[in-house]
Length: 194
Ligand SMILES: [Zn+2]
View 1 (cartoon, rainbow, N blue to C red):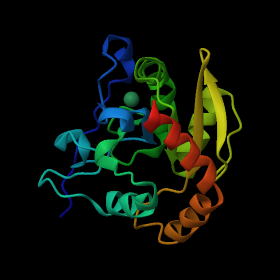
View 2: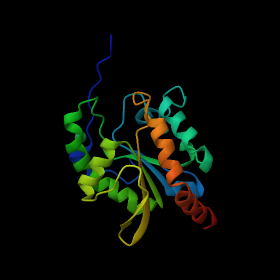
View 3: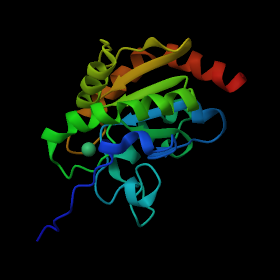
């Protein structure tokens, strides 16, 4: 029998949380690369404290796929920063995600202003839609583009969610990364040399 889990909401008093709430800070220059998901799942990093790791300290399938995809850029999820638009655990209650994301948006902006990422990788079409809605922007899936947060220039790359429930995503993401290979490599080189 599936264990019933309780939803957990932080969105109603989001302004009381510090910037490091539900944020994995990466290591060294790679901390400037921020992966952004939609909302935490049960048994994931919300309890393990490590993005894409479960409580047994094992990298979950989505994390394995991310690392495989970004291998040619010498990037691993463990070294990069990670957060989610929605800080609440909604336990699959998709109807709530949108409103939770809007309420959590100020904390997400606070996190961006403090860690000042140079590259943001948005994971999944739904995450991208919510991002665009709250940001009033039109970033497109697979298109490497630039954005400005308070005079701070950031590159955005939305990719498909690497989850195994979306088996086509790996191939699609490979194409995306091949298409923006040079642009992404160039920005990573600039970050590394800084
Ligand atoms: Zn909420």
